[in-house]
Image 1 (cartoon, rainbow, N blue to C red):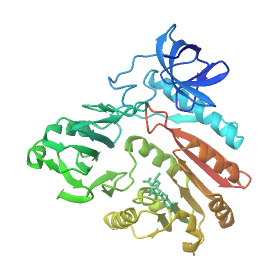
Image 2: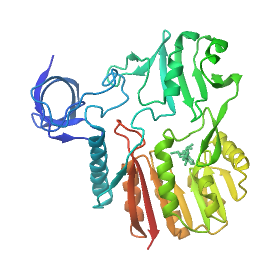
Image 3: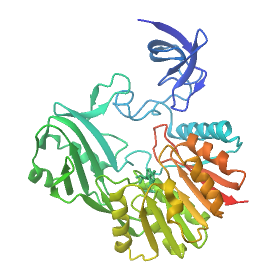
Length: 401
Ligand SMILES: C[S@@+](CC[C@H](N)C(=O)[O-])C[C@H]1O[C@@H](n2cnc3c(N)ncnc32)[C@H](O)[C@@H]1O
């Protein structure tokens, strides 16, 4: 076994400790700055090493005891060895450095706390092997059996108490809950699946069970209430996973948005455009997923909104569908961010106010770098949507210069 002694210098963007072995960089999970550790080398390529701590010679003052027995095993959380407040400091510092590196912006950033800290996720996806449910370990890729997940809503953890009523040999299960504790379960498996729905219904408020994209019980969706509106959420549509923090994002956007015509790019099931619709004459929503667009149209009717037009299209083709003058834009893209051609289109449209919601500070910084000559960056705020993980959610307000 290749064992090395390493002094940790700082944390990387994934929350791993960084040190050096003979001038070669090494990344070590669960290791904090100023700690001296013995590590087993678990990965070695030309550029870097990865290691696993086998002994701590000293412990950082930041170190705390993790609260979950599956921490460091299940591959989910990555920052449970520091306090919640220190996870927020880590996230602020990480985004500040990324903005500096990729957009040459030097700015201090605020972060808005997650009021729930734990039990905040309304969706989890577990793997199943030989009827055992769990997450895959990051390193070994072996299944780590779990009985609960402390970052998931309690209503989701209730379902895990009744695993014995599911006979799923191999595959995966996604469990979604809304704020009324209603549950939607979707299973994928190549084997025969047997579920004792009558028994489960005694304990769980089951709204639908879907196996291999076929509804086998009740519905393929539930209705979620958010910001005094209702949203149909299909089992396979994107929906925000932490509505506690997302409410804070929406309030912040409401304070910073104004105009006549809003374009909601990457609109999903329409949540942002609909909660903002009463501030605009007309709203346009563009989204690639056909089911999400169907749900967005359904939600508009459910909410008695009549000033939104939805288009199912790749966002990069937005110019084909814009015949109106757009003065306000929300973009909430996937991790890859915006294409360069889209940024050129946005600049051509002379949009006055842009709200950029991003789950990836690197693509956000790259895009801000292209926008910043034409747009003043009025504010960037972080919102803690994914507590105890290294993931961050940024919202950036841009005004035309
Ligand atoms: C981060 S989610 C945001 C959804 C929505 N704004 C919300 O708050 O629920 C990104 C959305 O972009 C959609 N999407 C991904 N690639 C796309 C593309 N090339 N064009 C349009 N929409 C896309 C996904 O289906 C997903 O609904």
